Image (cartoon, rainbow over all chains, first blue to last red; front, side, top):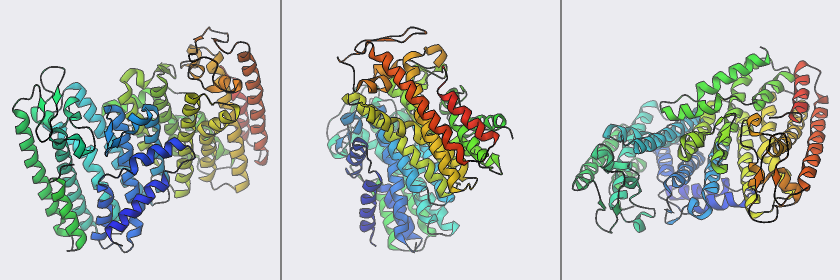
Length: 309
Length: 309
């Protein structure tokens, strides 16, 4: 099956596993899941599986569904904390149904992952469970650092490793492990995914600063407003003063009080770093045999740092 | 090992599995977990295991930990939605650390269950996963019914079956299944737990009305204030008027505007119903061989409807 056919199967299963006798849970889940998104994590599961010559690509589909559900559940919960109103070009669950339903919808998706994965081997479940625990820890670190104004570069790197790269790593590990790939290939894929995750998140944080909300499909400028993200990290903590005012303008960097010129510098440095990580990701794939899937993984790394949403 | 020794092992493991490199997640988890509570669900796992002559009681301990963690995670999330300030005689996580940390602490506990259970057989994981999904559905139904003012008796029964009885049923099923109990015994235990769950929740809702916060160790009167719970159900919907005013007095029923005399009637009827379910629970155990564990399960059913907290 071609990748896009498998992704279609993932999309269908995302909706079928989140069916519920309680209409609002199904409606809210489908609202965010059907909005699409890049499906980057499912692609990583499926491409890793293909890159190690997984004999039955369909076996990787439920794993891709599980990964995407975890990711989406955390987005739904994030949007409660951030008071985000737009996500994947739609209203957030929080904005449309309120915080209580958003909280329960996130919980519902977590339980659906657990249900979906129940019959998989312990080894597979441990990969996803560990990454999910790490992800929650990363998000908590982010909130603490932004509250306490302690977001320096090291903390920023720890946060993005935990909240983003961990799930990327789990994605390729799941895809490769279900195919019983040799250890060396799995390690190469994990190195790739870790570096890709860092590159992707740095670029995401740059887009939060410089992108416009319509193209992004979600609120922009939230990171700086909350004293977190790349610019704040590059600055070595929160900008002076308690309040941060942002004015967003299309096609330009936002004016952020307390940053001044250093914002542009932060973005420039960040973009450099992101490209370095993308290069490392690409190199990590050298241990794998040449294949269209390996090419596609490489292409993903370049796309991650060359995008507008 | 005696039951109380096993419960002690459960208590210890609850703390060890919620260790984290992120201090606030560990602190908030331990704050609520170390506060104790009745540990009713772990007791059900362990006693069901003993009642079917489970040869290795220690095998049931992690399952008891998993059940209690699920229960506690939902309490932490509930307290965000309810704005509860007191739980198990302590400040709620929400009151002490705020909604964002409370949300992430609940998520953290969910992921810790998933991690803890990863190496168990699919059959075991399916039991806990299904019950957890049902629990979240039950809580959502409760919120919708109270928002929409549609809480009649049937809806109330559906809600308490889903949000409370489902986890009780999973508890005994886990304890018996890990011991490879015969199907007839498992069915008897599940019937017991389902009826016990209904009896327990009705009594809980009565205590919310008639108990005092200090003895309960949590806020009282929240159910009626939120247009839910037994009294509202017995009334066939929310009381007339938008706002509900409650004045709580120790050792007496609260004065609830819009209820009048019917509140006392609701409590009387509710207590009758709870005793009927407790009797059904006790009878369901007849299929099991006589044992101290069976006696203890019977005693739990009577305690569930004769308690002040």
